[in-house]
Image (cartoon, rainbow, N blue to C red; front, top):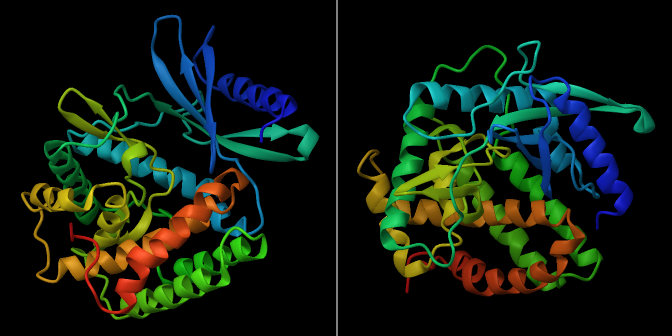
Length: 335
């Protein structure tokens, strides 16, 4: 839980970061803290920006988070966002350079004896979904993801581009991270063992796949309901902070968790208007759904405020998703 002192320090860092940009007399609004700490910045002319400093909730197993906070990784995220803004018609959070023309600004924190990388992005107008998405909104989400994958598969990445990969090694680390939930009594050892078995099966599956231009590239990797907004009829992606290399079908599997099972087919209707899907995509997506769930739960396990939710979600997923997956039964697209 953030203390009053934490809030003061966060705002001081935000104010220090803004001195490196051509902005003045701004209003700051704290938005949240997870992998990053974020503020909305509003100018007197009502222009809005998103200020991020790439430090957030710390916990055991912080190595899972640290890879995304390396300055080179942050720079690479911003390179992709800028390319998407230039090369496509998508509305994405385009990075804003500082006075030196750099996208990553390092702020020295004397009290901590360290520095924190910061970045500034254009604000994306839109509203988060209020309730369940409609079939048409799900189709639009599928189209959006297909456009992201189209760009990724054809984009020539600049020299030095570096983002973490959603691969076997990361899944193994995430599975290990989940073990802390057993140690602190949040989940049972039986449920954790089921997660271990399912993750091992997914690891074996991933190891059997080939990384081709059409199957593997830079993916958003976190395009759930909280990470896109609606503006008119447009679905706009936000929060690319967990983007990295991965299979395109992994990206899809990660996005289906908060869509009602009976409506998930509409995602593929939209996606397939722009990109072909392999004949076995339902079973492949189910495997990646399991893998991405392990990664997501491991990410949430770094935040003690998520323990109560995880204590309910883990047994539900173990029973309704992992058990049928381990038995070779379909689970993701049934009503």
